[in-house]
Length: 179
Figure 1 (spheres, rainbow, N blue to C red):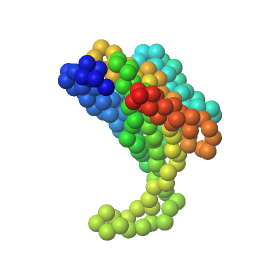
Figure 2 (cartoon, rainbow, N blue to C red):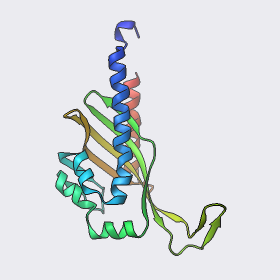
Figure 3 (cartoon, rainbow, N blue to C red):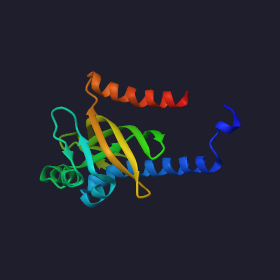
């Protein structure tokens, strides 16, 4: 690549700032879901956002419907039962004022039926179990100077082709950009 094709210092700084803002946005999902803070969810989705949980689980369209997801009684029961969302480090594909993020998310649940075990200096616990692992594809847009979620698709890692294809799309997009 020649010098004229290199990004300027300002452009590189903007890419760093965007990457950090996107990390923060994706990292905010677990605490917002595990506290049921619908106002936060509403603040980070686009007005006409889409939440797609794949086949077999309902989704939502529009920021109000998406925010209402974590206000459901069933979600509150899951929180009270020891729900914890645990996110992996996201893969970010910046595209100017848009970005594609690919990530993993584990849903952990307090194992109330597990055997009580003690860990030195950490007390006793019945432990946790991994309820589900999902693959996420987040489509983001910069709106009024902030990154927001246009759509989120999450698919369970269940041995089918769909989650693998979603991961492959994320890697393929990064590979194309690198060439």
